[in-house]
Length: 322
Ligand code: F6P
Image (cartoon, rainbow, N blue to C red; front, side):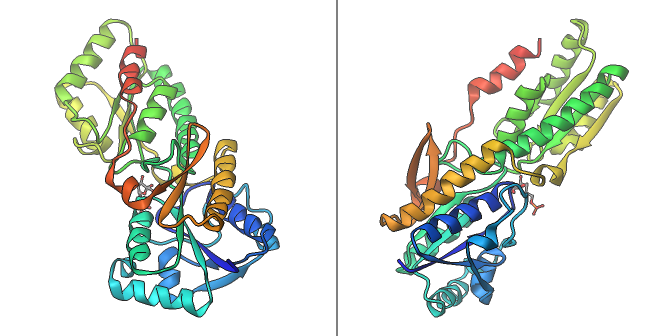
């Protein structure tokens, strides 16, 4: 293998830069050249390619976002778009591709891998942690800690005014962020896309908590909750409880900022693991970390199974609410 390419795709995540750095420096260590693709699969379709060397990835391990840029690329979903991408890779003499992103990125990788002879190895980078084949995705730890810091601040004012707060965190289809933030932030309840939200039940819970002495009440909701996000849930609760409330939607602050130590380390291990995997003949798969071991899972396999949510942790939120 003489030359590989690396791209970041989908929603950016803190730690993607650390992953790019690990890919470039591991490849350089093995005397393999690296090309950076700008804006994910879009850059492959449009031939937006730049050489990367060890110095191009200096001083980025601590930076959020991605120096390569990212995109969600509709064209890559079509056979014509993928043919253009393949031509870019052929033109530049690329022997292997590392794609950092989430499940959309790996869906693209699966299709391309079936059509091309080029080996592709994925690296899980998304704040959502909704990718099977790895315990954690790059960016999740940072996003959870960012949301947690916000909740701690909200708690100060919630306690002072004895208020009910609904705090919405990211997670359009999965509730991994909401669950960890709720558990670590001492929320009184958590509402997730994986579970049906029963507003009367939530109200009954709040009523009984108030009777037992709850003062500050924080309810964490995932943006993709089936009852429609924090605003709608709060309004529905008000209709039953007539209790004053406030809503805080944390939004994209959760996607930015310096990656945590855990995310930098995970990104370094997985970025290096992707290059080592390509050298060892891995293809059409994602490198993840499961129980502290690097594991290569075929794209088809990890896309076929939704990552299970920790139902024990979910029940614990209620128990520990007191
Ligand atoms: O990166 C994943 C994610 O942050 C989801 O949690 C969220 O629903 C979505 O991206 C937001 O995407 P966009 O940046 O396109 O609004």
